[in-house]
Structures are given as C-alpha cells and as structure tokens.
Image 1: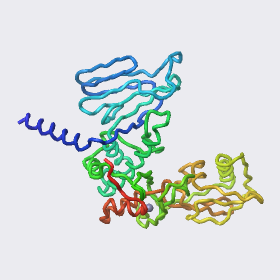
Image 2 (image 1 turned 180 degrees about the vertical axis):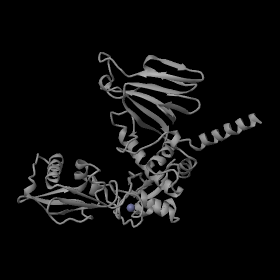
Image 3 (image 1 turned 90 degrees about the vertical axis):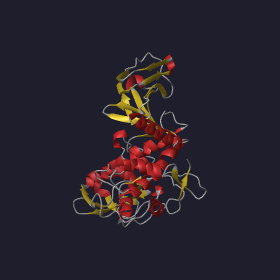
Image 4 (image 1 turned 135 degrees about the vertical axis):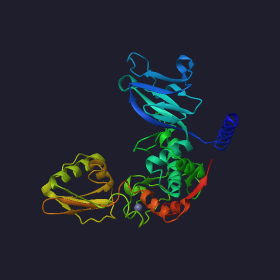
Length: 381
Ligand SMILES: [Zn+2]
C-alpha cells in the first residue's frame, strides 16, 4: 500500500515536471548584506564552484556560510554566485522559512564591507504562487489571484529581460521596490491553482510582445498612466475609471501640514528632480487651485511659478503623508490640508478593484481587460 502511494506521488511529480517544462527560472533577492548565512534542510547538496567543492549531507542538516570576507581577498568586479545549496526534497530552509528551488550566496565588489546577498533561484510559477499571498491574500477569490498572477508574471518577465545587462546577479528583489514574494509556507492550494491555471500567461501589446505589468493596492476611483507618475510612458497603458475599490481597504484620508513643513518638502522635491537647489519660503507660497485628477502640482513661490509631479512630492515626503497621488491640496489659514483617496502609485491594475470584480463574478481575463483595455493576454510557456 505504501509503495503504491509513493508511486503515485512519483508519477504526479513527473507529470508536474513535464507540465512545467520550459518555465523560466527567476533569481529573486531574498536577503541583503548578510554577514552569516545559515541554511538548513534534508540531504542538502552544497556547491562552491571556485573551490571545486561539492558536498552532500545526509539527513536533516544545517550549513553555515560566513560572509565576513577579508578586505585583502580579491573580490569579483561584479556580483557572482559563490555557493549554492539544493535539496532533493525541492525545499531549502533559511531563517524560519523554506524556499522552493535553490539558494545562492552572491558576493560582489563591496562584499568585504557589506557582506553577501542571498538569492533564491526558483521556477517562475512557484515564484508567482508565493507572491500571490503577499501581494494579495491567499483567501481572495481565485479569479482575482489569477489576474494578479498574469500581471505579476509580466512584471517579473520584463525585469528578467532588463537585468541581463545589469551588474546584479538577480532579476528582482522581494520587496516593495519590485514585488513582494513569500516562501513555500505562504503558498496554498489556491495560490498554486491561480499560478497553474494561468501558466505562462503574460500581458502583451498589439504586436503580441510582452509588456510590463504594473499594479497597486487601491486607486481610489481612477488609475493613472505610467507617464503621469514616473517619467517614461509605457505603450498601451490607459487611465481607467474604477468604481469598484472605494468600499475596500484604506478609507479616504485627510492630513494637514504646516505651511513651513510643506514649503520645505516642495523645495526638496524641486531640488531633487530639477536642475538646481531651490529653497522656498513659506510666506511666499501660493497654490494654484488643485484637484485629485491633476497629477501635477502648480504653485507660486513669490512671482515664480513651479510645476512638479505629485508622485515626486510623494517620493520625498513619504507614504505616511501621501498614501497615494490621488489627492488635492487646499490652502487654509494655518496650514495646508491634503485630501486624498487610494493607496499606492495608481498605475495598472487596482488590486482592491480586482477583488471586487472577482467577487461580482468576473473572470480574470475580464478583470485584466478592464485595467489594460489596449493589452491582450498571451501564453508564452
Ligand atoms: Zn480602484
């Protein structure tokens, strides 16, 4: 009986391996500037290519790596994998988490001062499954998870292409800088299903070429085009209405700043994104009337009019003051009131909008069609 069970497991694993043939492996940065790395797992296999060391450990083992590198050691000019660990179980542990795939220790020119980085080499579909619980919630309707899987896969694929010329030995960070992914423990039947049922599907433009997939937490009523938030346009992106997210997540927000505080933030923003340092006196500050739909902020400092992107002001001031760029500033006697809605950069798919659409019975392709009206979905592996 036991033999039959293990045979079934073996066959189902083989079927899975076959189904996922051709799936790219993505390198995800999971730990930065580490002095010591302790990994654990069953029957671990350790590879240190530079020293031609290959070891196999039996049973449950812990392997220690020291990244307290001596500054006299010749360090590589660009990031290099210096050691890797795998397990025939498919899972390797680090800290209190377990990761599918391989863990790689990466060192670069600054390793003596900063330590090593830890990278997880993982199948794209396993990566997507672990991400769904972090970027959404694993108990959300599966059609919302599937929409997220397609958009996040598109983001990861384009990042992989961008990073091939980069000095880093990874494609994306597991952080808000790129996308937050989790570990094996974060995956569930539902996240695995959402990845599997959209396997290899990415957003494409009208020439069927994959395009970058952006998403955010809550748009607050309308999404923005990439060029309204950052500098570069991305072909095909539209600003679309989203009457779906308002009942969920963060309520409309309202902050008040002293005029001197805001003058300081505006000066810093203009200095950071402009050609020369600018100091703004709070007494000389007058705002041109503002609305939420305007992505630029206009104001006078004395007789000089300035224009800046609200997203740049948000980058300088932080998300505590400006949770999104969907806000308006209103001058008051003793300060400036900021009234806004939504959370995040506002470009691409609104996650809480996708949640509501899935709750109302829409499929993932319809959700994607709403937020990306000029794009299609194509299966590329
Ligand atoms: Zn929305």
